[in-house]
Amino acid sequence: MLSLLLPSARPPGHVRAASASADLASQSWCLAGVGKDYGAVCALSDINLSIEPGEIVAVTGPSGAGKSTLGRLISGLEMPTRGRLMLGRHDIADRPARARRVAHMFESFALYPTRTVAQNVASPLEAPGHSGRIKAAEREQRIAEVLALTEMQALRERLPSQLSGGQKQRVALCRALVQDPTLYVLDEPIGHLDARLRHHLRGEIRRRQRRLAPGTLWLTPDGIEAMAVADRLVVLIGGRIQQIGTPEAVYARPANVAVARLIGDPAMNVVQAVLRFADAQVQAGGLLQVEGQAAVPVSGTFMARFATRTKMGRLALGLRPTELRLLAEEPLASPPDALRGVVWAVEPLGRHTWVTVDIGAQRLRVKTGPQVPWVPGAPVRMAFDPLQALSFDADSGVLHADAATS
View 1 (cartoon, rainbow, N blue to C red):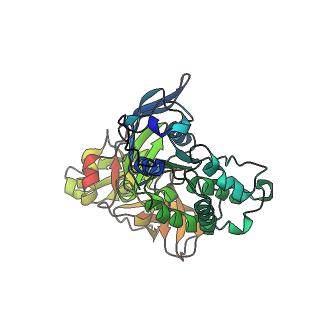
View 2 (view 1 turned 180 degrees about the horizontal axis):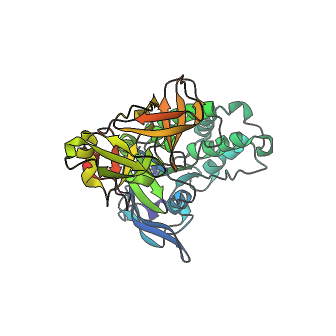
View 3 (view 1 turned 60 degrees about the horizontal axis):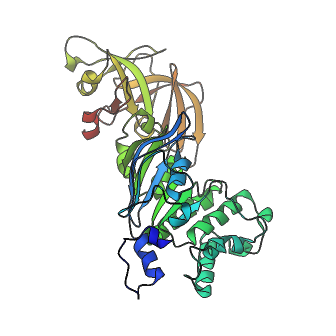
């Protein structure tokens, strides 16, 4: 099996299969121009992505974005319609799943119903790809380690029918982690767990995976989870990669409106508005009109930053919830750079509160302190610093280049 992936030159006779396995685990994966069609439906298009040894690459995107399809293409459960899929120097796009040795955790769990938890976890180590490479003592040690990691050791003799959905998910996760693969593909590995265990495991699994030679592809619709575990973050929407970068870079400079509305806790507000000059002098400021609301004044700083980025006066303004300040509505006062709105909902979450505000036909979220005086229906103003705001092209939704570097 390994000969399908190793160089054509025969290795020295004293090199064991375990050494060859370690060599494979230390090679990078690379997808170049990969696409997948199902008849007339294009599920993935022009996927260019690398996964380095020991790296955690998290792929996030909404349901139906193509995350699971991407994982199945890498595992060999689906064959790409076009493009190259490389492991090290070898194109393996046409290799069967058994020749790739990918540890794939399925979103559907796919447990053996007649086997216990421990037997399910051990099952990949008994497959031909692992048979004879791992001694019984080491196998038991691996099983015990992953069961302890996921807090499942007390349930090792139970059958899947005796487990909850979250416990079944942890068994499926253990079955992937116990292996010695070329790559780990984890499809929504902790999505069904309670909040405490989910937060605990994403940190523990990240620490474990970064110590290992193989890379990890982590697939999740939860952008916060993806940011928490990733060395590099991939945003996949509609079968296309929208952005690749560190979590910090993607959060700070989302490539377009779709990414901005997906990444963050809560995600960035994108306000569709019309900007016009108050008079002939830019320094005098201007007026910002949101549909359904009266125009509000904006400062000369705002105009200098955004006036040249409009399309026929239209502007898509990116405002982070953490950078908005709620002020009481003052009928006689019109401070610049403050949108008018009405509180729609207040969500106290302990150390902070989310306040949702309607401005015309749009709804914005503000992340503020633990106690707020606002109640639903209260008129408010949302003040912002124009130097912290971003702008996107009103037609394409692409982040303005000068905004990315400001």
